[in-house]
Image 1 (cartoon, helix red, strand yellow):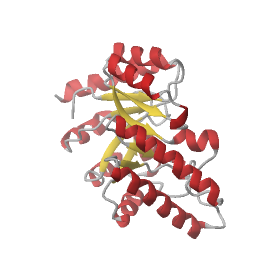
Image 2: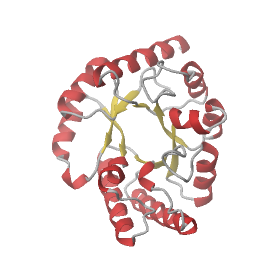
Image 3: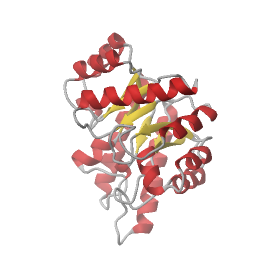
Image 4: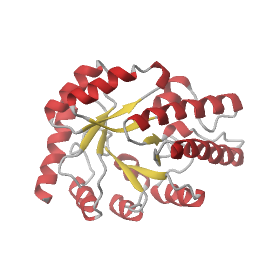
Length: 263
């Protein structure tokens, strides 16, 4: 695992200023959450990436669901079709940066009266997105999320077993320490169990704030990732408290300190 291969997202504001601040702190990448690829000035984003030297750690789908209420398991076939179309647009964007697409809450909660249909729609949507992504050389990473967010694939084992059952070669798992803290018996054991499918890691403490601010043992988390020879990013998904710049700096300094002790 590279010493400080860290990235951040959930910071809103002027993209140029954000990326310059992250580079100054020492970050290696940025994970971009994109609502609609058609609305993004891709050439400008490419220029900022080139200028700052930051890698694109991943493309997140969350705003598609959060802002436009488009999910893969909506009861409306028109909504599901538009959700898949938006995801394919993000796949195209990911292909430009040789990165992955993450799917968490965007997959949607199953309608309470149509859970069997929910599973069918989830399978169909993920398969269509992954087939398209494979044609572009892009990995799709599915994130287990706790029951407050979704009523499906809440913990590492559930998500991992489902991913294996699909037989889709470019479908991997994205693990978030906050959701693991809530749903998994052991974060360390979950990381080990998912090691062959682990594509990306979101870092957040048990209070959803910067690492080191609450209960998660990140020394153990990073020790396990190092032992597993995890080569991906540590991407910060945190509440922006007390403010975005401070949270970003505290996160980087804390994780960098632990990584330094492990080397």
